[in-house]
Structures are given as structure tokens and as C-alpha cells.
Image 1: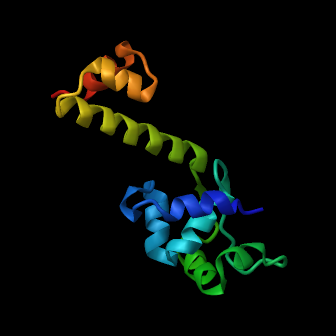
Image 2: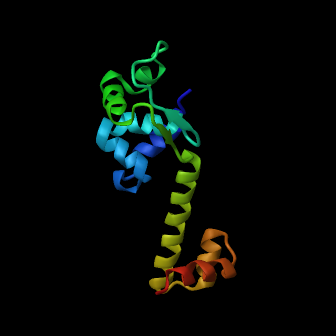
Length: 133
């Protein structure tokens, strides 16, 4: 069953930020069908059929036109999808870390940043040190 909450969250992500496979699928079959595949097969794989299936499950998920395009390019191949949850969590942490570094760069103290983000100063120091050249 398609997780509509995750689908809606993914729709807010810049198209250039998705994993390579998802970006390729967006170009091939369109934004929404690609996201539906990403959510539905999160953390698992899809063996792309050569022909329409008897159940029509994949066609119902992404539509006939998207299915035809997917099948032409990936027929009989196995496509592995990363976890949507991991992808979203990684983006959240990256955004937090970017915010921490920008605050530090703009003059905030490590103590103030730690309090704002409910982290230790040691963690703030580690995050900031990763951003230094």
C-alpha cells in the first residue's frame, strides 16, 4: 500500500536532490510515477516485467504510459531502491548541519547553537569541523 504521507513529503524535495536512480526515473516516466515507485518499493527491489502483468499492479501504480516507458528501458532488470525513510532522515540531518554551520559562520557561539538544536557543544564542534576546508 502506498504511503501517501511520504509521497507528499517527497513532492516537496527539489528534483535535483533525489538519488541517481530516482532522478533517472523522473526523467524517464515523470515526477509523480517515479515517486510512487520510490515510496512503494522503498528499501527493496522491483523486477521490471517485459509485458503487462496479469494483476496489473505496477500499471495501476504508475499508469500505462509510464509502465510502457519503464518496461522499454528496464525490462527484465532488477531495480533496487534505497529507503525513503533513510533518504528523508539524511536530508533532515544535512539541513540541520547546514543550519548549524551557517549560524556559526554568522557569529553564533557554539554554546548558543547547541542550546538551539538540543545538542552538545562537542557535537556542534564535530559538525562544524566537517565543514572547514
